[in-house]
Length: 176
Image 1 (cartoon, rainbow, N blue to C red):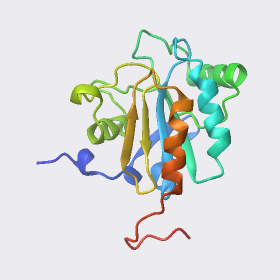
Image 2: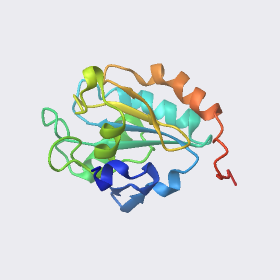
Image 3: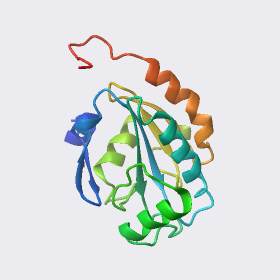
């Protein structure tokens, strides 16, 4: 028997944001990039590239969500306020950051439970290996790509462009 979570749809998910609950039903018809982030990681400079992607596509049915996590080498030790301040001051981040949460283990947030169930990584492993792993969700709420931490934001740009050009299939959905 499938668990309720594994059979749930992307748009039924929610996450804890600094100013309350972030409901994924507002993402219908959008291409969404979800990244687990950290402020004190060797990959932290990717914030600059992620912000560049956000600036380039935010007005084109695209959303970028950052999920801070302290599960990898304690590289995100700050409070949600400290994380937001660091990201804004050092990398000019304006895309939404969720509250710090787990992306692996017993306390994994529901978004990452769903993402990992939908798209496994290399060798079929579902766990997140490190900070700055990336998931791309198309306009129909399907996980279409997953990248390791070493994949830079500029390498993802062509995929975002591709999925932004795709229209929602005619399944009674409207873009209005």
